[in-house]
Length: 419
Image (cartoon, rainbow, N blue to C red):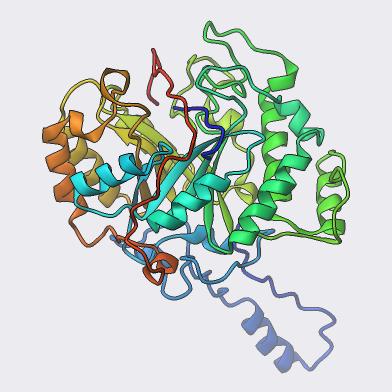
């Protein structure tokens, strides 16, 4: 799901020990060999395996919840994940503080994260202001279109060729200046034909090389590398290894290094559901992804699809990038979704999509579904859902979210099939 706005909007490597030039006595060599072949100390936040319930896979200290930036050319501080045993529950940003406040008041819970929908080319200054005023951690859902179903302003191939570098550098600088963690749900639902960066039309025909899945993966890698930043020389070498041009434009020797984590959130099955338009066709590799996830709506409750994504991409924390009742008041869907999240220990974020506009034009207002809202209030009252991320616990303010951001035009959901 997507909407246009004009103003809204690594793996952890265990060191490998090498034995070089062993010339000591046999007994010393044997002792050294025993040391170097002992099991390596696991990373702090293991990804995969049997974790023993709850969120035990986090493994103790150092969880990525906003303090330190980490090594951004690998994994962004472990993805800025919540504290052990917690799930970040959030809401989408409409550009109007009143919508955020209504959701907060009706659910009885302060959202810890807020997702703003942004168009390519716009630096989210107004969204950043709303995140600060509402005391929420920000999520940017970044599209190349100005609205749902609109043609893209830039192709995947053009991004990979460096023609969007100016925007990426500006975005990175704005997020670095903020000095707080930001999630980027980059080019979401990429295997849905309503997005210009999808490689297929609704009828199953491919769109052409400029928006092929190969160019999508190349564009993704370039975006991640440039926004993560670091030494220009190192970045240019990394791009060269990918067969891409160096960073375009004048920059300092070291680019900004914002506290960012990138979320890869496809439809669980392609729309159209044809070979070549499945999630795996768009996956750029774990080195360029900090979170994986999926979207789900009560109108298309594809829990089997979520399960498939969760199981297949098991090396990163999992987010529900969008969810909501749709079309009927279904408290059972809310209960099932939250139960599913709690049973899957890598699920660490759930973001309610509240649509745009009011009344008949918006099918996703939480007040349209009183029974589901009651079920949601019950779920969000549980201690597993923190009200604030650490950086926002300290910030003063009532979290009212400010006024209108001057922004988003509503989009029709017309005919979209949930994944």
